[in-house]
Image (cartoon, rainbow, N blue to C red; front, side):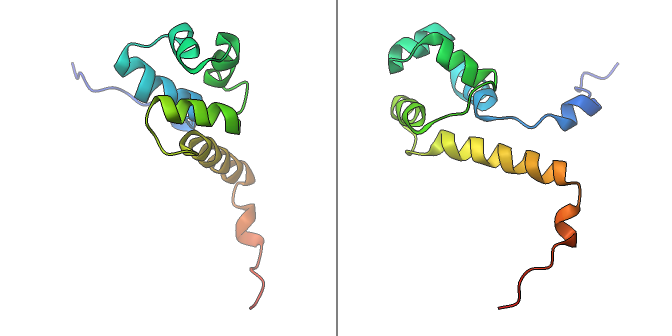
Amino acid sequence: MSKSSTTTDSDWLHIPHAGDLLVSEFMEPLGLDTATLADAIAVEPARLQEMIDGKQRVDGELDLRLSRYFRMSEGFFLRLQTSAELRIAKRSLNGELDRIQPRAA
């Protein structure tokens, strides 16, 4: 039996957002839970959890707090979020962008 992980269609369709990456790349490796991180960056745990769950966007203030705490450049978490949103939008357009002719210079 193979020990390799199997990618399902739903896994392929999932685009990680800033909250997903916050958990998988920062919180889990450091053993941080939501309450501990929220306390460290002085935000309500519910606010942080909504961002992690993808129910709330990262705003400038939360980005600055997270970026400072994890020693990342300002705007890091906003860029993660924007990148995910662009991928989602592009996928939802389903090739429609190809029909738009760029304006001539």
